[in-house]
Image (cartoon, rainbow, N blue to C red):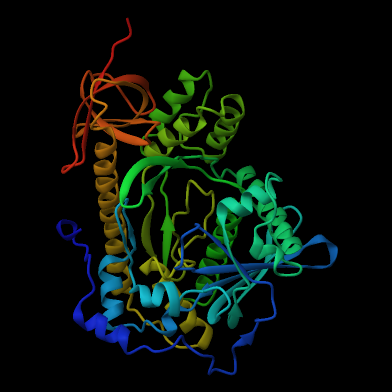
Length: 473
């Protein structure tokens, strides 16, 4: 982390500043709405305590539904220019490694005083959206409110219940009416997802490696995949981030937009499609790509995560850019949306905290808290630090993989090429979910190729996993 400009520890000034904060922010402004009566619930990972958002639905006449998304008002405690804010501004993100989590904010805040914790009254920024039966977002609004999380829920438990393979998790059963409300939310989220995909949003199912421990011993890297509950939160957050971007633009405020430009390696995506007997146009077309992806998902669901990973690599990474009032900005190619920012995870990402400050200024009629040149530099810095955090996470994950594989030298694995450049060629294997470098036989390989490789060496300290390509006989 230090080598990449990330701070792994909080300074003495931050520790002292955090220690001086005794309580969560309380409601003192008469303009805050009291929404404590609503059936708010959080859905996150099983062990997450840094809860950034809650959601709840309200059925409207005519089949429409009002979706409320409450985002933790982190700015109410973490003030611009404070020592805590300085650390968050430097790192710009929490760093999630296989060995340890390095939070952007002190845990006393992110997992308690600024978290939308179970049963606690908290200040929030609320984004409300009226969603039609077709998944289209109509009228929307943003305001400050007081909320209470009625149930802390986890993705896997909620997904199994929604799919009908398990009973409702205990926190759902304990709150009258919550089960029906969550089913309404699920129905609305699925409609929003369908509409996005009809407009070219990409269906992608990449596999994330999750470390598994037995006490302090790493025992496996297991693949985590999307489910019904993660999709519910994802679609609501995409909608809320779109509403936020539009609101700031309507108020004449600058904003940090999240964009994914048209892929530079579109020609390779076209080639991948051709290898699978499909055709894509010669120039980037998100709708055509989505139709191809959906067709492949149905035709070969077992290998679809491999195809998704190849497409993700070829699409490139998203970035933050400054949008000034009246200035056109590129949209997000992968989500097929024009207006998009990051605003729903202020405990974990600095761009979201920054956007929250812009929103609160716009809501109160105050001037923007950041100069345009400062915002432009922050957009660049946040993109750079996100990349650095990703590299740290990948480095530790590679060390974890090397640790698990060091007794498997000489064994063969089926894999998919995930990277191919002058810096090297990389292959991912399924179990354990790990990536390594092809040190022999990499000539002619490109992203998306399926290969058989033999493990030839590991180095836990440096995170090296070395493979040799096994030529077909």
